[in-house]
Amino acid sequence: MSRPLQSKCQQHGDGEIYGLMTADEIINGEGTTGGFPGLLFIVHCYLDYMKAPEKERDTIEPYLSLIRDRASGISPTPASWMRSFVLKHEDYRKDSYVNEKVCYDMMRAIVDGV
Image 1 (cartoon, rainbow, N blue to C red):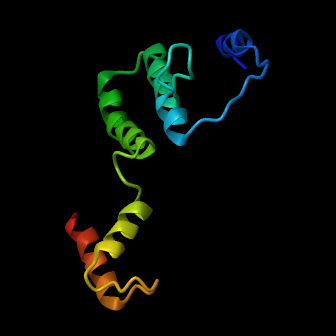
Image 2 (cartoon, helix red, strand yellow):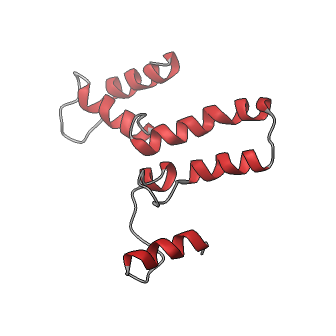
């Protein structure tokens, strides 16, 4: 384990070098001074360390942004989007059965990019 994290835990007196975090905190960081900075922060530090060209960063950034937004809940996961679509559909009867019309409309929405 890294020195700063060990120091952080020792300062709190718990003697442990782990803690519970949400997916958002793991990906985007805890947002507190001395807290876990997040995997995306570490990725950006690595890109800086490797002196990654701007073109490579521009290629990677949309993927990192999607990961950031999914972890924080800003952008729904595919499963969340589908669940929401079905629950809001006028032909869904709230009986756990997704009929052909609902499935067709969902596929149309996916193909159309809605």
